[in-house]
Image (tube, rainbow, N blue to C red; front, top):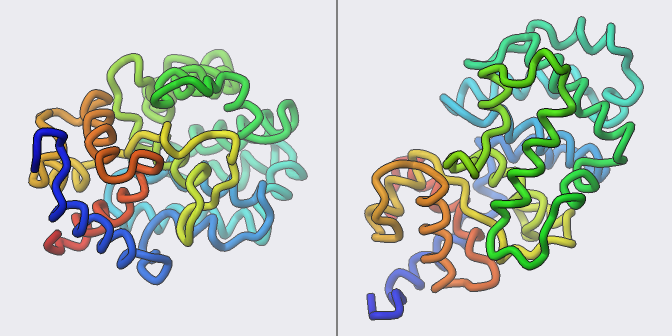
Length: 264
């Protein structure tokens, strides 16, 4: 690696794996669920929920997301907008996943219903606090997370599971699941949807989990020891040496190489 931080060998490997880990390698991944739908709002809702539940054991993640999407049926958007609070409460009260209990799942679906009824889409809410001049989406994510938590009942604000659901980069969180959702919405290729074209892929921050942390440490893309926002930005900035306009395009490949215990 030269003084600019660029390595020809690493560039070749990154680009090779990016091409290798295409749509044919999608399953198993939470991203498989929004790919089931054609309608924009169905994709947006499915992607949002799939990213929120994307923590812990992959098998558990896929199981709970299968359960959620079986409730939605052919259209998450239609289900949420047309269902009463009573029906949503009945259908989601037993949807549980690690830190999230049934009440959290019900509150999340009702919050999404509230967002679509008042703002038209998740994108519209995000864009209210989007800053086009940002190098990264740190400020936008902070305000979006605050806005999302305000969609929940007042007595739930500050609840541990809700704070975990929508972490804050201002408090140092790597915000892995939010960055994952934004990658899916902003980037545009075989895997990612490119639905939020108002946002530049160059502003995205890599969703750091244990797999990204481990491989990026080996690749010397980070010197940080703790998974936090600082690490996420450091990895992203180093990946900009290999694609300045779309550094997070390497995320899926790096993550799945780690998940599948393959050699980079």
